[in-house]
Image (cartoon, rainbow, N blue to C red):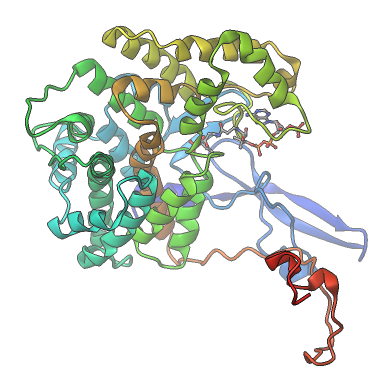
Length: 460
Ligand code: SDX
């Protein structure tokens, strides 16, 4: 077990306990309180059901710690995000994406020698097996890049049998390097395929971000020069999306991994979960929302809709389950947005619209009372659009960046000794036991007839 993973697993019991009293049975339960290095403590309820026969009910996991982890710390009230103790603002300013990948995987920023070796491994795993390239041809040209990425990443386990034994730390590390390295290639190829353009191989001379831009935008018939300002912006966007504690897609990867599934299958599950508009799909939804709003004059109407309890419309890129303050990534993203648009000499009215939307919302009691602030997705789409990414590639970029977070959590979970399969229980609300009725005596109930399927058909 690496020292960083060992640190993560070592939770301590606090001196005090948590008393839970069941007034139905009159029983009182003294439960241990677990404390980490910072943030809320946790009541250890692992034996509660065995002792009390009751479950704890928390469908959205709003009050549940699903694991212990030393990778990322978020203080939502104060808008703090740290990876292995380093503030996201410092990492975005002073590191590159592969530094952050190394930090997330190993718990420390790399020494110069470690950086050289790690960068070499990632660079030299960036190509895909040539046979995989034919896999793309099974998709329609208009397939969403996320659909292609779920399929291709899941298929990697059919190509890389030598790194699917999760019990072997060496194979786990090779699979980690392969996934981080190949995601940029897989995502870029999905875009090229959708355009009917030839795939562009990665270049070992370029950084991770430079390669991503090259594979996305270079064509064989022309020279391609990476704009250093855009490469820096790309690298920063990757850093800002690298990891974020136990979010939906990371929890999906952990749950998939808890059954012993191979890392490629686990990451494919993470990609599928990230795709949802409430999660990683929000950056694409923000651009669509800004397009619908279209002018500053219409902003109040959309804010009115977002506040209407009878309308499930929400401001995309706003709100967060954990941040009840400004998402620190959104601040860095907004500054990067200005840098990129200035560099490209682009005047994108959507940026002004987004800033007007932010200004009005942050002055509105509805958003203030609910502590709804812009999140990481609010500005990222405007930058990606300006850089030339099509809207349907935004979540694919998020998936490319987040792969290291998924893998770091998967690795941490596997390093904790015995793997325990995640198996939540439920509050059952269905039918109680019923006598089986054979079809000849079942009462014909109109409400259960097939008319709902075929309309007023003669059968009914
Ligand atoms: C990401 O988990 C992570 O860390 C995710 C992520 C990561 O890096 O992995 O940070 C990336 O997914 C960012 C979030 C991207 N999603 C969006 O921008 C979609 C819009 N946001 C919302 O759908 C919502 O804010 C969530 C899903 C992000 C969080 O929802 P919660 O925590 O379940 O909050 P909630 O739905 O219980 O809302 C609380 C109240 C409700 O009002 P009341 O019922 O109390 O009257 O706030 C309202 C909600 O209606 N609300 C919004 C709103 N978000 C919440 N109202 C209008 N617009 C919004 N965006």
